Image (cartoon, rainbow, N blue to C red):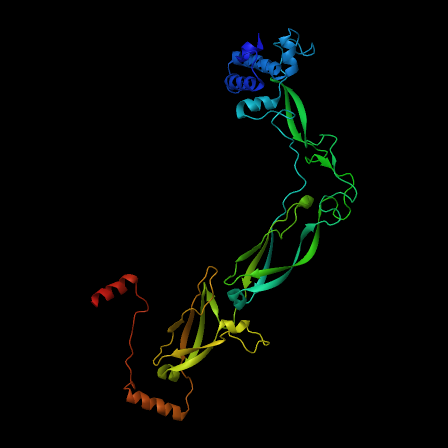
Length: 392
């Protein structure tokens, strides 16, 4: 039967029209789609017609009235010898098999991006609050300077693979009820690279990179906390084949401070007062976190290393005073608070004179035999709301 008639195309149809017609018919008659035995025979005829019209030499031979297979594969109507990629094209719209127009070489580059690296460092609370610059010693893969990342010994270069001719893949053929099916697999000789290094660099053994220890300077911004990661782009592991380096991440761990504890951007500390100071009121001098960043070689500075805390008369144990803007600077601006908790210390040992004075004070205040006040240890939210409404 005429292949032009089988595919339903004109005799002057171009290659794209022939391919489109074949795809349309293959979707209709392929055995995986249409189990009808007649459809299988029809699909073989369509495939043979496409094999003739898609090959310029076979098509020209048929148009001249000759045998398009040159007597080697039988006449029209025999088993087809189409490519497996042609069937895949029919269903998935591919661009043809190896060596066909629209498809480039599938060899993979030896040069690939390197992995990211992670190191952890510990810094002080003041350094985390106000920022610091650190010199770090890192051990990563770097580009081999002997071969400049190429992997070949000096004076030599990678050569095209003779097995796949630089394509990075080779064709394998097998017979099936559909005819000869050709598939493409990575070339085993060059591992899919398309090139072979006949004389590898002795320094890096052909990998294009070596391990080295180097010093990096990292600037840690103000406001970081434990778990914060600082990214250094392009300072990680150099990739195989001298490929671009990944990123280096510096993970921060903030050491415990002897005075302050941190909660978000707020700082907390506790001061202990004798009961007389809490009753009469006093002024305390507190160190600031900035005091930790002033070195011994900086006798004069504008940094405020201390501040005054005004303890009001009658301050109760457990009360808090908030010093606005004396906490940790935020990564996105602003600054937290310093929250000071006051603990009133009750004396446990009194000499006779002290005891006498306290008893005299208790008598003046009529507190010699206090009845005490009993309160519930805790109240629910609804209970507090109820009491608040009852007061109005």
